[in-house]
Image (spheres, each protein chain N blue to C red):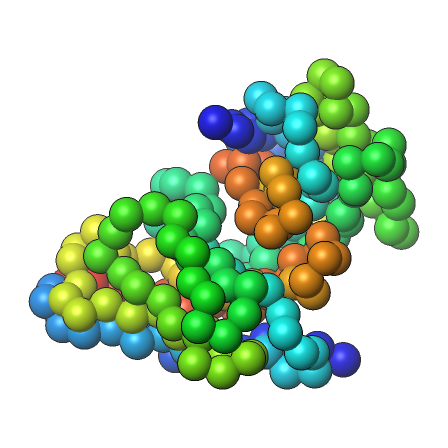
Length: 112
Length: 112
């Protein structure tokens, strides 16, 4: 059974810092991995999708990497801003039906 | 462009009452549709998914059911709500064969 873990559970950083969020999964036979952002009381916003054949994806200040063999993904946020404060979730899909298994999230607070 | 709608946004229901939550997607055809629940202190859990009209797969045994009466409409129902049904319900869609999944704004359900 696939299990997804995110470390740390919470993180507080001063504005301008670069930071890394970690995601690990127990079964390396994944179809893809997706990173999301969730603001309090809101739905999920897709940030980056990495296919199983890819090593990384970039969007603006965000860079996500994937190492299937070790069961790890990282989300790198450059030059953090207070507007980046949110919960960040990673999720893996195990097949073509794209059923996602989510981690428990990292709550990020960027202090101005 | 594609949009996804959920309603109601919030709902407070007594134990034993029925439930109907609706999700509709605009701007795409034959999407895969998903219902997730986010309970307090717990991660997001997939409840149902559908790859076409009338085709529903249940991921976990529970007090809820789902239906897909039209191509872009997905309904989550219950005949009698339990306290444990409280949570944040999220609908999502993806293009069949394409990995990225997009989420709606969610419905906050409180069962008293």
